[in-house]
Image (cartoon, rainbow, N blue to C red; front, side, top):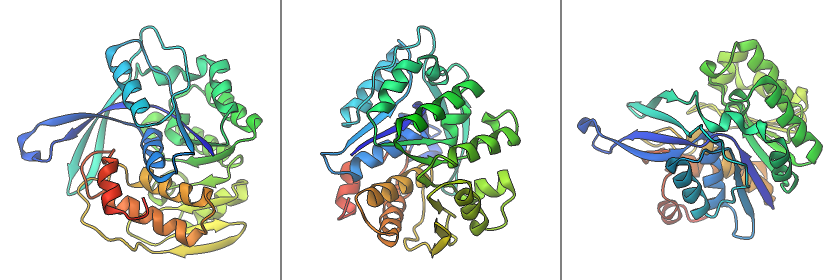
Length: 306
């Protein structure tokens, strides 16, 4: 199995464990990179997990490239941008819930589709492509259309987390159109209900599941925080409740890690119930630690099936 996540890698500034100190520690993250990271931990060693982005020629870009490659995640070659750098974000925590401040206007990843031949080559070797609403949001309208066109032409299975961030979109209507277009190409859509309620006005997770399913998605997994979620498959709805209640210290990668746990289980043939159980266990452990990327050795020690 060859899985390719596409998106933006960023420098993360997260509060130190002693948050009262006012100190922050630097890390690397980004929603699709987070999922690629946890996919690499979930998947067997004979599966290939890749991460496609665009970087610059600066020292932070080189550090990011070495970090990702060192995790066993493939990084397809994309010509670096001569004068753009990775974006940066800062996490602010309030009782485990996070908010973000971003500095990403000059991010090299925004120009990914300026290298269409390299992107096409990377996608052509993938069996599964994973991207998010943030991936689509940072691209130009033409770049967005070109990327979805390349995925469709490749024949790869598409997994998509809408991950709506209002500040990245020109207006809600543009975001709605992009999400529904992506969903029409998908094998898996993995939305969070809070985002769907904000963007589409959905009244409950069932509305979300049916809307994406009727658009063409084969399987829709509606995450709903601590509340019941559901899986929609061809008109059949399977509800699920949260089984791993924990005192979260940092929910930064809750959805990203859930997606990795679910996708890896479904791609290796597990049924929906087992996939949800695996996804919830991974997400519960991840939110018990600070930062987007919890060391894999910690997860391996705490999760018997990881």
